[in-house]
Length: 203
Image (tube, rainbow, N blue to C red; front, side):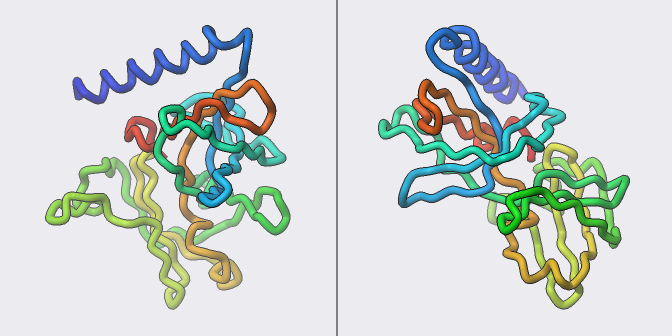
């Protein structure tokens, strides 16, 4: 817990430095990754309208693309891309980014199973023998279900979707990493932080 709080303090301090100390010369942008090209070192994300790590609002269109810094010391871990923007377990709806239409799509689903208060060390989501998190989402095309774990909400949901959506890649139902960039020129990140890889902000 002490280590977690220390990392949170460091990140908050870094964010404040970026926002305040660099505001005269550059800007800070934050969002969820929907595409990452390792060959061209470009990342495309949906901006977080709320700028609230506990209650994000990934709803700003169009997506924005940044080229990553050339210096390794200015770049964090490579980001994971995903299409899931939000899962609402009360309304039984999931919102995804559709790359074909370049817009959001909210899909009604049938809840098959739902568990709350599932932290990242829970046996249902963490393999203690292998000492690593289990892989999610789990897509079952025969049963037409997707099992989704949200670390931020601490929920494990098994949802049933219409058959048409199973033609989409499995990453559609995954949440991309949350990232933060500092830039002076549009589309060119001078500093890049993979916030999700710090294991502080949950997906």
